[in-house]
Image (cartoon, rainbow, N blue to C red; front, side, top):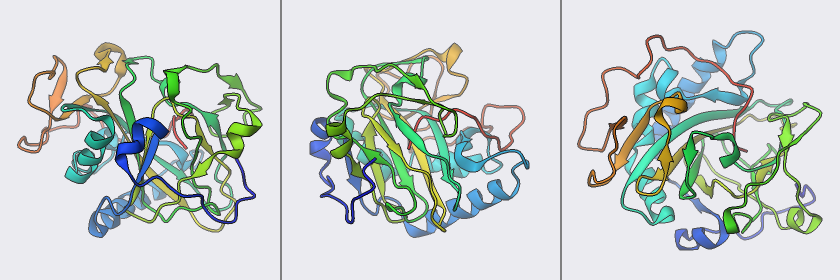
Length: 280
């Protein structure tokens, strides 16, 4: 990533350009009160992590967190779904998964250049986007995610190359110098978000600053074109918007006029981490 930048290049605020560039920024997407509640919940999770666990990959809070109902409600937050719909240009949307990605101050691990889609063998399709919602203010200093515009073109799945393991994913993809020099940092205020295509190349540096960098990633797909192998997905798939045309067997309907489910879908909820995550 180009760490010589002293200020951010022009950021794409126009969802209509998402298909061309592979990403966009949605400022002030979620209200301050909701973000504060999310931060308090995250603080609780971090405080209760086992001593050998790191906070970079608190996965699926909408399923496993003590207050999973809050996180699941956030995943169907109307402005979030509006932004997804604007980017994917579709009528029906499914929620595939979510992750809290938290780089602690001083030693937050680097995330090498990678694509998201290569980590999701149970998900087939190209109409997939990630909403990266900032729970902290995020800038270059505390390891903002960089994207390389237009690298989603052609939906080419790149080979993953092993690293020395001193990073978050332990793998990377090859990029040219020109590609790296074109990378754009997604600098965000609390409550703002970036949205990026699952094939776009992205990553982030280690967080060596004195500020935490926390984001909540919510992954969505076009229900009409994305196929999920329910048996292999290991987490619920939620139908969050649409007229029901592609509300498939095994999906859980949580459109705004529906109540949230009585349980999260797991018998015993707990906060946990995973070595592998798929985002900045």
